[in-house]
Each structure stands twice: as structure tokens, then as C-alpha cells.
Length: 320
Image (cartoon, rainbow, N blue to C red; front, side, top):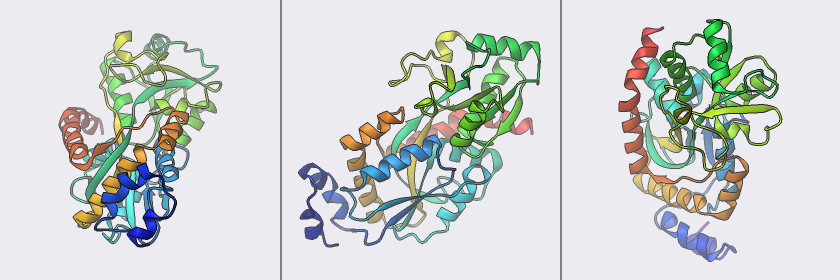
């Protein structure tokens, strides 16, 4: 599609002005496949699909979300990294989980060495959740039960090495607790395990509770401040429990070596997408809000996260 045809295709003036820089030097001519290395139904999947829906009217081609779960996100990341660096295949993922998994497992594929960082579109913050009919009405109840029966309670998370496991294991370690670690492949399966009472509690993104309020109980947010959407949920900080604040940006990556003009075009398009009312509405439905960061700022955030979490990763490695 030529640029003049794109502008004349009935888009709003706002979308055209926002997206115009993206197409000045590069115009995608076929659908863009965005590999998402987790199962459908999780928090990352929900945000990615919100972006894909809002991209209609910003991008001249479809943005297609392709789920490739496995090995805590590394299977999909490996496939995305090996794709042709021509803009037709990208990856959208929980960058915190990707970073921490690569650090913990020493994987060949890493955020900085295998990819170009395009931009952040949102953010995920973990929470402590239990089944709706759980006897645990508070974090204090949970802590007391775990203290009384060391290693008996079962807890779930989205995958080994991800930021949910790091958040949960850090909480257990810092509060002298033991529980059985039960990993799942993504937020959707983790939430289902809690609802089905296969586990006693879980550390998942706060947005996982959206639409499931009658089936889940959120005990606390693993953060220093309350959530913009779920302001009724207390934080571990205000409850007085020791924890490590670990959140995760949702980031689009391109294979290493992708042309800078393509990266700039995608970054501009993602910024335009996150500024649409449709994206804001879809994010709110999913218990979240837009949070755009350009590629440079996103890279800086991930570098700082790498520094801040290294002690936690070292501790997890020592535990085997």
C-alpha cells in the first residue's frame, strides 16, 4: 500500500498524523506476525491482543498474535530471534520474565543479544491470589498457615525464571516460608489452576483477576503502591511484609539486525496504537492501563532491572 493510499483510506486525522512518521521510510506490505511465547488467556496475551485490535486503523496490515508457549517463554523467543529481520515477524512478551529467565537459565537467546528493542506498550504487576472459597482471607492468614505446615501448601506461577516466580519465591524466602512450587505455562493456566483449587495460592499479574472476581480473591499487590484499576487491593508494603518489587513491561522486540528504519516505524506505530481510545478501553477491560515507553527508555529500564534482580537470581540459582 502506498503512503497516499494509506492516508486516503478513511483513517482519522489523529491516527494519520501519529502514524505518518512510521511510513515515511518503511511501509509493511504483508501481515506482521507477533510471536507471543506464552499460552492464550494470560496477561501478556490479553495486552498483546488489545494492541492488535487497536492496530486496525494505525497499521496498513494486520498485526497477528501467534502463541508459541514452551520452556517459560524461551521456545517462542528462540523462534522469533531466528526469523528474518525484515519486519514481518516480531515478538511481544513479558520482558521482565524473558530477562529473568535468560539470567536464571543462561539461555542462548537473550533480550539484548538476540533482539532489537522496539517499545513498551504496558506493564504487569504481580499479585497474591487464592480461590474464592479459600480459608485465607488475608496475607496474614496465608503466612500463618505456611508457617504452621512448612512445605505443605502448593503455590503456582507462570513459569520458572519468570518475574512471577521471582516475586513469589522472594516473598517466601524473605518471610521464612516454605511451599511447593507448581509452575504453569502462562497466566491463563495458572489462573485456571487457582480457580480449580489445584493450588492454594499463586503469584500472577493483577489483571488476571479482571472478570473473575467471583472465582478468585486477590489478597495483595506485590508493589509499593496500589493499582490504578484495583485500588481496593492492599500492597505487601502497606501490610508490612518483606518482598521484592518485581514488575514486567510488555515489550515488542524485533530480530537482531532489523533495519533501524523498520524499528523506528514500528516504534511510531506502537506509540500511536497506545494513544488510541480503543486501546485504553480494551486495557481497562483487562484491568490495566496503557504505558508506552520508547525503545531507548525500555532498554534502560530492562538494564536497571537486570542490575536490581541479580542478587535474587543468584539466590534462586543456589537453591537449584
